[in-house]
Length: 157
Image (cartoon, rainbow, N blue to C red; front, side):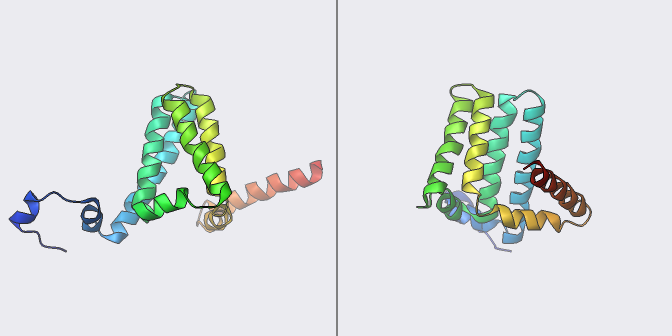
């Protein structure tokens, strides 16, 4: 690891230095853990009738997890790319957060955020789908559920 002298402890640590203290492998694990926690808190927030506090904490965990997973500049660059759909998704996501926190409409804010997430992560969803299907135990059940739902849509048309 890195060695720190007593002078290092008395100087203020900048964002970049603080990010470099944690090993990249651990940063990724922390980010995945925070994003998994955010998924659990989103689930609990929905189950408990759109509990605003849980949904707000879930949002903070999600953004913190994304920060730890890819870093600050990539997170900001990811949300604010020049693509029209990304900017619309970013506006919807943070607009939903504003609706949830300031206006106190949890359900409307949550669904606005979901629409924003779908816009922002549109290019990422096929990769996520293939990644979740590769999970050892759960993957085959997820694949069969998705296949079942997609077969139902085809027969309904």
